[in-house]
Image 1 (tube, rainbow, N blue to C red):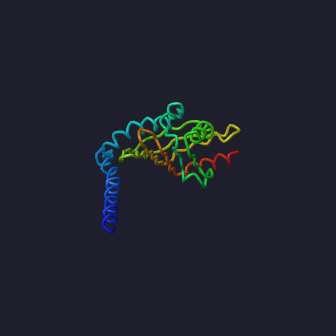
Image 2 (cartoon, rainbow, N blue to C red):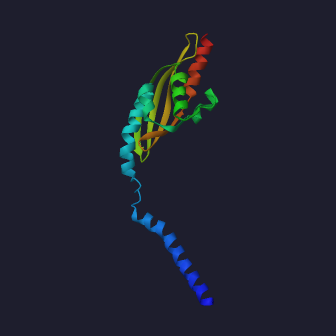
Image 3 (cartoon, rainbow, N blue to C red):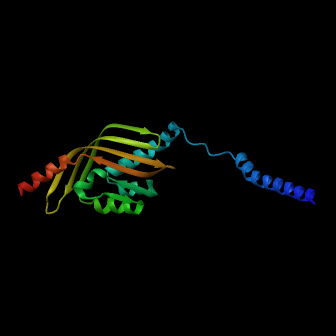
Length: 180
């Protein structure tokens, strides 16, 4: 009796081993997707980021929108003390911010001092020349140091971060308010 129980247990263990090994063997047979190299990721990121950057600075929202992933986000942590929290999560929220929130911007020009692509991230450093209509014909213009980072995944923009020195804008705003 002991022999047959042991034999059945051995057969059961052998069957379980085959069942467990089956998926592992199948996984090994399928070639795993090889991660992109730094250079490959950069080659994919560069044209997407450049098209997005140009559309953003040019305020061409129709050209910008298809470059965004559905779950993309926009964030400007440097704007919080000036405009309150500036965070939009999701393509629809970003497009609303750009189409509605940026409608008071009279112009945006970005003089690039340095740009580079680091794998999935493109960085633009330079000076933003911009104006904003504060209402009542009061347009405040300034030129400020700025860094823009654009992160891509699967050929779409997933993250856009602005970092601006708002001191020139605040000085121009104070001057405009004191002139009134």
